[in-house]
Image (cartoon, rainbow, N blue to C red):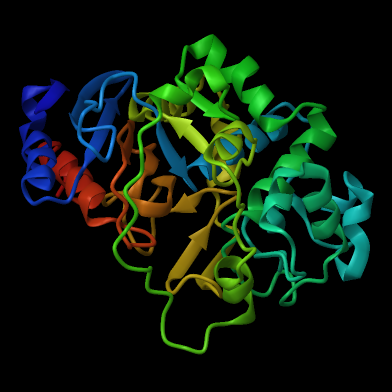
Length: 370
């Protein structure tokens, strides 16, 4: 059963949302779209658990994995907007230990755009060590880059959150999760978390894992890709409640689609970021074949830019981020459009999940721009 709101102009979106369920591609999902500050679509459907006993509801939280990176990028952008940080300064100017192993010249913008050569931890570790913030930051500070920094991007699925989060902490004094709660989620009443309190765990949707692995391209995989995804310690390991409770700003955000869409709408209307800061944050830092994921990428300062893959509709200025299994969050400054898609049935697509693409394309059809 599909519930929620859909403006009559956006009936193609409702049809696409229903079609995803009819085709058996969804377990539970929510899609929210905000146009010039007005919520025009907020559709919910399916189940929050694999046994299909608990409806996916307005208060259901979804793990959004790497869509969390858009939130981290925004938190950094706010420091730049406040004059507390410059994208061009070196990471080591804030975090002196980071200068080890030839990394002294790496800038903040290079680290945020996946150019610093630290796509994964190369030293074998216990996967539970990812829950020790200081230990992981010490390993990253000491590690030599896997490729020459600044020469290419190599997507950082997990390590991005520690580098960005430590940069933030060195400037602000707080963790990203705490700052998100105090400065943004609390004041704007957004159901959005990096570090989920135990009291909220019962609201989290159960994930149904993808039936096949993502396509990382033809072998052999690069060393950067192996470090990022293939080592047995590439991802945190341990109890689910410990994962939810941790603050990993690259990977373990929990949110509703409405909260993510409202976050991006507040970016577009100037509530959270000045126009100048938004332009700085979303400007291209590197373009080309990524060393970790098998596509040509255009990276901003933590945001994924829409060209050349156009997974968030036709907008050339659109930016956002996607997460493992299919979630995404995006904003189109040209059309004043902000949106987010969350779900609990993972697909194998690394970016551009067909379910969200259909919804976004239907939105632009409704606007008469496709």
